[in-house]
Length: 106
Image (cartoon, rainbow, N blue to C red; front, side, top):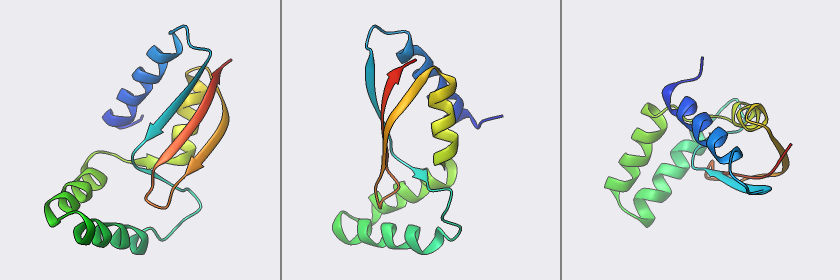
């Protein structure tokens, strides 16, 4: 079973599939790459950069989001989109764990 956050994402993706748009873009704010077994150093670097470039409060909010709001792995998000009836035409992942998917209805 998916955590509440992922279940909520799935409901939104299903609802979006019911719209009349033939192609859609999705962006998820925290998606971990499945092939990266040691995320700690990357997460530490992200949080340090946020603290330096934004502020400590924002960095703490991002850390809480990652820790408590059930961020997930790329293969789960891709499966969620496919299960909702989308074909993934392109997937892009950034260094800060963002994920963008260009999808079309199947």
